[in-house]
Image 1 (tube, one colour):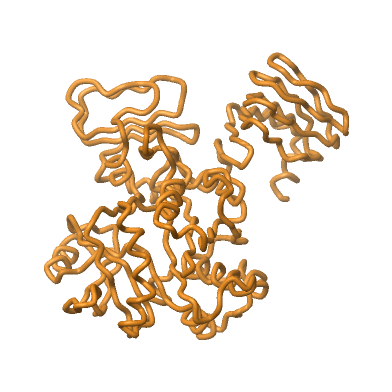
Image 2 (cartoon, rainbow, N blue to C red; image 1 turned 180 degrees about the vertical axis):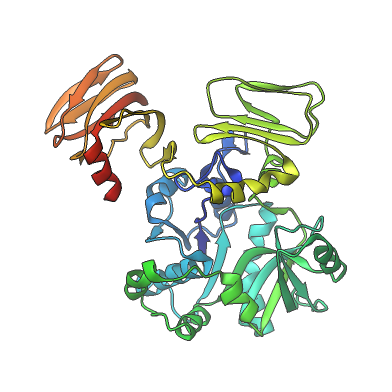
Length: 441
């Protein structure tokens, strides 16, 4: 069996810490074995490895996040990049066609598709080993993994099974996608399960759906058409159309970490970062990535989240509304991002009409380089804040240490190589007409 781990999604409901540049998969907040913290994607990959499922693991991420995905998974697994985000069905199909084109899978092989943004116990992943036998025994075309709801959630999809068979699975009667609270309660009375977003089938089953939609069944051809494709959900395109589906029940721990309410329930501490909760602050959580202190006094049941992209103070039950607010008030220029080489934070953006001065803090990981580049639209200067490395400008190297200042003219090729962890402040000076050309590119 081959496992395709879907690593897409921007996670706007976890703003301001996640967004289009830093996906929620990479938030280093979950408690790790032996102490410390780990990311969602790091946790899931560790559990797949412990379950003996990592040798056939393929990760699918947005092409701009492949280097970051490698960073958070230790470069241990193959990763392919989506040209753009087109939903779970399209991403799963791209992964399956990659395995087929590379000769790693055949049409009769079993493909398991799973999301990276979940929190489950180790037994959840051990159940994957049963999928091939259950598909054969049930003669089903699709297998899903579900778990018993702990409350009538409006954020999850539901699977309604018929009476369970002796083989540890049940036929699927119907689906319900994110119902209202009263409908969710009625579904629970019918013994419905939360849909965990895990699917297994023969690869040929996915090929049939691609052909039904008039899409190519070759990896290169699908990649070429990718930017023009609509967003398609695996649930809508495959699961809800299947007439021969079975569901396997997981009795242990599972949740989708797609909201501040579900994520904070898994955190090792109520306070992360500078600041504190004071007085009666039951079930409140504070996460602060800024260097300025954040304090909450006498307020229960809230999240107080601060990062370079902004600050969110919300009642936990209402925090998901931030997604709608962001849709109506979109910010085109991100202030923070992570990459394979480190991270960057915009700390100043000043304009007088004729010039834009952009000030950015760059953080480089040890042994990593900034991508070598030539800036045609701006001049810049670097001041090394900490760390040790070297600066290259037009092929000439200079040792870089704290206090060093380097000037790069427009058109000069340049990079920084970090021997130890480095921080540097970059100041870009962009003429107004050049800024317009930069935005148009």
